[in-house]
Image (tube, rainbow, N blue to C red):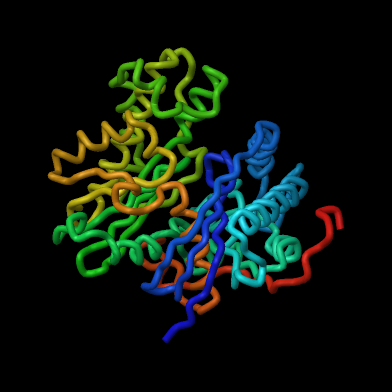
Length: 384
C-alpha cells in the first residue's frame, strides 16, 4: 500500500493576482483528502514587477536565462511564497515537520511549446531553505524534453477528484473540468477513466487586460462591467475564427497568444461583455475536439465568479444537453483546486509516477517530472 503524504501546493497563476496555498493528504494515486486553503494577494507594486518580468522574459532563449530584472523578481517571488507558507502553517497550527513536501509552481513568464521552452520563476532550493520543508518545483520541463506541450499538468488530479464526485454529476456520461484562469483549460474524464486535456482558449486574461487599460481596475468583479454591455458580434467572431480552435492538433497557450481589442473597437462595457462571451464560447468550441460529449462541465478558477461567463456557458451547454456547475456545487473548492493539484503532483513526483500523458500534453508516453530540493534548516531572515 502506498504511503500517504501531507503536501502543500503553491500556485501563482497567469492572472498574477496572488498566491494560492492548499493542503492535501494523498498517496499520489486515488486517495485525496483535501485540507485547508489560503489566498494571499499581491500588492499592486509587485504585480507591476511581474508584468515587467513578462516583458523581460521575451528575450529568453534558454530556460535558465534571467535577463533584465528576472533574477531579482524570482528571488522576491520565492520569498513571498515562503512567507505564504509560514502564514498558512501558523494559521492552521502546523509545523514544518508536519509537511512532507511542497509543490511549487512558481510564476510562468514564458511558455513557447513549439520551441520546447517554458520558464517558471521560482527558486526551489531557496524555498526549501526558507521553510525547512522539501520542495518539488519545475514540473513542466521534463514533459517538454520528452516532446510534450508542458501543459496542462492538472488533469491527473482532476481524474482523481472525478472518482469521488456525486453520482448525479456523473450520470453515466463523461465529466469535464474547466479551469478559467488567465488561460482556460479543460480536462475530459471518461466513464472508463480516459483522460484528455488541453488549453481551450483565453480565460480571464483578455478581460483583465481590457478593464485595467480602460477602467484602471485589475478585473471585472462578478462580471459587473460586462453586465452593462452587449456582445459585438464581429469582434467576437474575429477571436473565435482564430486557427487555434480549428487546428487538428491541440496546443498549449501563452497569455500573449491572444491580445485585447483596441480602444477604438469597443467601449468599456461592450468590450468586457464581448470578451466574456468569447471566454465562454472558446470553451464550448474547444469541446468539439473531445472524444465524447460530456454530461457535466465543472467550472473552476476565478472565471467561475464572473456571472456573465457562467450564464453564457450554461446557455451554450444546454444545446449539447450538458449542465454547467461551479466547483463548489460539486463539493469542491474552485479557488484552491490548482494549488491542491500542485501538492498532489509533488507527491506523484516523489513516487516517480507520471505527471503527464499522451492525452494531456501530447507527450509520447507517460512522463514524470519535477526537481526535488531537500529540506534544510530555515534561514533566520530572508536576507541571510
